Image 1 (cartoon, rainbow, N blue to C red):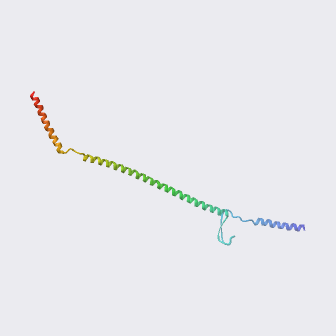
Image 2: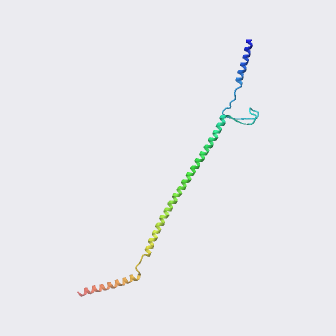
Image 3: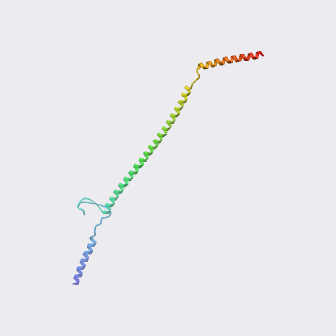
Amino acid sequence: MSNTLNKIISCVMCVCFLSAVTITPVYAADEIVTLKEGEPAPFDGTLFSTEAAARLLVDLETNKEMCEIECTKKLDTQSAQLQLEIDIMQASRDALKLRFDETMLIRDSQINFLERQVTKPKIPAEVIFAIGVLSGVALTIGSAYAIGQVAGN
């Protein structure tokens, strides 16, 4: 009986050993596998391992966040550039307005000066004529008196 028992034990051990060698648990590698109907899955489709699905999900979320960050960056850069152009135009407008205002002040002061020159009270022509005649008469009288004094001596 010991011989039979040894044979049974040997057979059971061989079966267990062969089972352990040939039947191994199936683990999906960290990859995506495409199957056709009739293969281990009874339908067409794509199988993902947990790690591959997690990596795909993380990649999608990361790419979405990177896209949002890039869009925000470009939008902020464009906004800053346009604000710079607006500020430059505003400064140019302010400078031109100041120049215009100063030019208008100079023009107005020149106009006022010229108006004062034109409207300055003048001595009437009749008065100038009378002064000329009177000074001529006085000069003639003064000359005659001086000649008379020189001749009498």
